[in-house]
Amino acid sequence: RKMQSETSAMNILAKIIIIGDAGVGKTCLLLRYCDDNFLTSHLPTIGIDFKMKNVQIDNKTVRMQVWDTAGQERFKTITQTYFKSAQGVVLAYAVNDRDSFTNLEDWINQVRKYTPPDVSIVLVGNKADMPDRAVTFDEGKALADQNNFHFFETSTKEDTNIKPLFLTMLNDIIKKAEKTMRSDINRADAKYTLAAFKQNDSPSKCC
Image 1 (cartoon, helix red, strand yellow):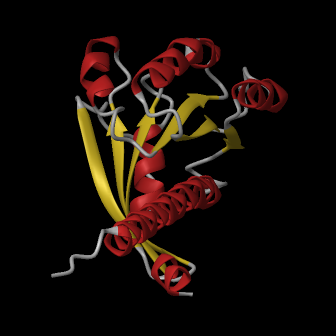
Image 2 (image 1 turned 180 degrees about the horizontal axis):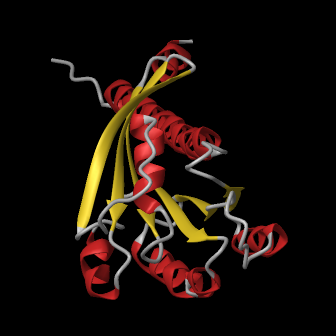
């Protein structure tokens, strides 16, 4: 009962990184989710940027760091350094940019190489509102299923599926945090039991 109350009231720090080719709308995903804002034009991200957002889910407070990365090749080394401590990865392409979808293979390889094995990954086909589609929904879904990723098509302009994609990821992160806490509590209980056993089992001294 005590464990349930602790997990229900826990505070979680979640680091989420948005990656993908330049121009797929990574900054727009960040701004739409964190600020509920959409920019019709902006300068390309240089290096890396982030925003903070607090989210309340089932009496749990999640303090999010959402990192926006540059998609240009020359910034990939910088981006890789931020993978290691990420709890969530938003892997984005643009549905009207076939190359950004084709290049996902390289991005997926980087994710597999540099992130923890239990990281939550959401594949996002952005710019779903654009008329000049070059990648079908089924192609995106098939790639996500093949790699065991969550999948959403989004439009930052129309605010389509932005909150659901991040909520799906946050639920994964919360489950992981709860599992870790239960494991820590069980280990602590085991150590306490073992210590008590050793104490009771120690030979009594008698004069």
